[in-house]
Image (tube, rainbow, N blue to C red; front, side):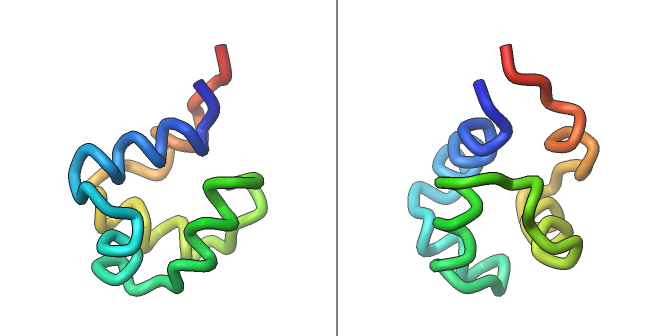
Length: 68
């Protein structure tokens, strides 16, 4: 599972809606969708921190996630 798939699953498990999560995290929905469809590695530090803070996870959980 890729980092993007892991993130999508975490969001949907906790918020049931990507749009609702984007609003809660105070990031544009279009930014979230771009990150989930392309590469989380290209995201700004601030956006990743907002995502992790809203989900209550350590950013290292995403950074260290290895695709298997």
